[in-house]
Picture 1 (spheres, helix red, strand yellow):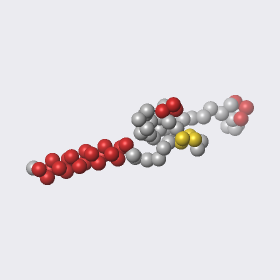
Picture 2 (cartoon, one colour):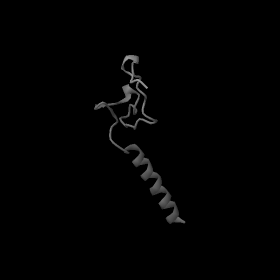
Picture 3 (cartoon, one colour):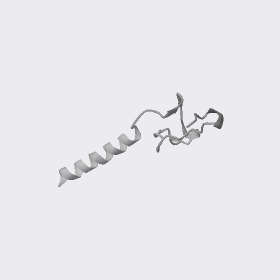
Picture 4 (cartoon, helix red, strand yellow):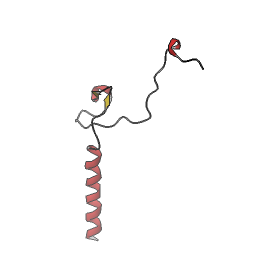
Length: 66
């Protein structure tokens, strides 16, 4: 029983630590993003941008003919 509890505690802390440091600082066009860009938190922990890439509108004059 004690072994099971120990395994659960280790997994819990391991997942917690891994989720804090799960990857590089997100960037957009080579510039680091931070809390002022709506990414991460004021504690300094950065998070990846979630969701699909944003679509970029092409001005009508630059659109290829279909």
